[in-house]
Image 1 (cartoon, rainbow, N blue to C red):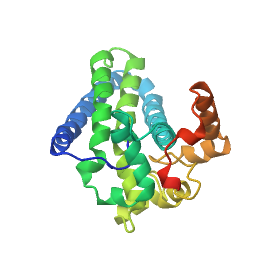
Image 2: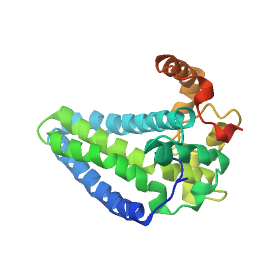
Image 3: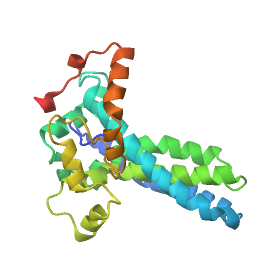
Image 4: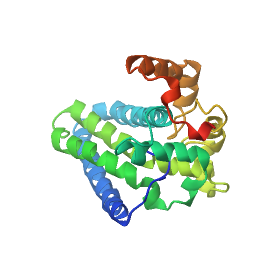
Length: 237
């Protein structure tokens, strides 16, 4: 769920993303179909199952985007094996060049998230008895919707950085159905320590008012004995 690829974007990795995106689309579609079949057998219960699954999935996707963003900005080092180059460095370089993400095409913007989502969607499709149990049908719809939100997070983030996004995108931003530039600008204002959520931004005011991320940071630094000075923060210097 990185904010842009600051590492060597190899041809082999791009080919993997070219496979991952359609594979995720197919699996998510199949999972949603299973959920629909299960709910169709219980029409008297589907009225509450569909809106609650969709709303909660979108809300949780926004929260998870913020949590991952927070961790990438504040913990670890760019020199860490695997995670440093592929995960931490892109987040931090995004603060150095916030417009870099706008120069990525659809595959480069969303490919990594498709690869992250694939195992979870595959597991849900394989394990959930969506046609036989109401709870499983609800869970299948939730997972499918949640993964769609996670997959589109970087796309919404990219649109929030565009100077002139398409009119229909601006309409979605103004309606707050996706991340708006005005809200995301708060995160790009020093000291860059709030409004981490980048799917819809719905959770940002709540997490900011409750001091969620500062409290979480204090707990994590205490548990892992990780002083604040140890985090690499080139984007804030």
